[in-house]
Length: 304
Image (cartoon, rainbow, N blue to C red; front, side):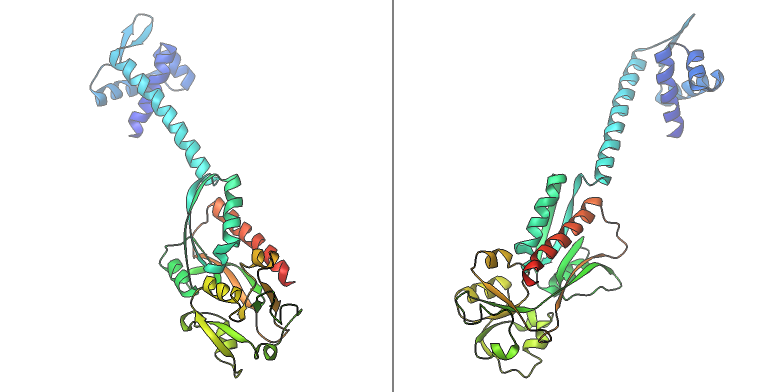
C-alpha cells in the first residue's frame, strides 16, 4: 500500500506537469525513481495510465479516471482530518452519564444545556438511580461520568472532584420550623419524618442520622425516590432530612423551605464526580465536569 500511495503521488504530479522529468525536479526525486514507481503502479492496476509523447506524457482514459479518483480521495482525506480534528476538539460525540436523581432535576440539565451552546453536536445518554445503581453503571463501563452522593472511588474508578454539602431539613413554607435559621435534631423530634427506604439508606450518609442513632423519630412514611419525598413534604405530611441539591427552584419559588442542621448535628454529605480509571476524557466531557462544578457551587449558595 505504501508503494501504490507513492506511485499515486508521483502520477498526479507527472500528469500535472505533463512530464516525468519536470515532476521529478519538483518532487526532488530522481527521474528513474519516478519512472519506476509509475511502471509499478501500472503493473498493480493492470492498465496503461499514460502515453509517452516526444515532448512529455498525457493520461489515457484509465489515467484520467485514476486522476479523478485521486482528487476525490484527497478531498475525503481532508474531510476525515477535519472530522477527527473536530472530534478531538469536542465538536461531536456522546456523553454517557449516570447520576443521582436529585442531581438530574436541576444541576445536570443546566450544565448539559450550557455545554451544548459551545458544542451543539454533542448528545447525551443519561441514566438515574440510587448511589449503588449509578456506581455499578460506572464499574460496568456503561457511563463515562458518574455524579452521586457519598460514593468513593475504587481501583477501577477515579474521583474527579468531591464537594461537601450540608444536610438540613426541607419543610412546607407554612411549617413551624420553616423560619428558623438552623435546627437541631431535638427540634425535629416533635414532627413526623419522611424517611428514605432501607435500600436508599444503605448507601447514604443519612443512615447514621436516621437509623444508627437513638433519636425517637416519628416516621410518617418511607420512600425510595427523592421526587416522592419532595411531594410528601409539599403535601405537609412531614419534614425530611436532605441536602439542598436539586431544590433551588422550589426554594426560590417558596414551594419548599430548607433549613440547615445546627453545626455538629450531622456530618455533611459529599457529591462526587467519578470517571473510569485510565480513561482519557474528551474535551467536551472535561468541560461538562467544569460546568457541573459551577452549578453545584451555585446551588450551594442557598446553604451559605
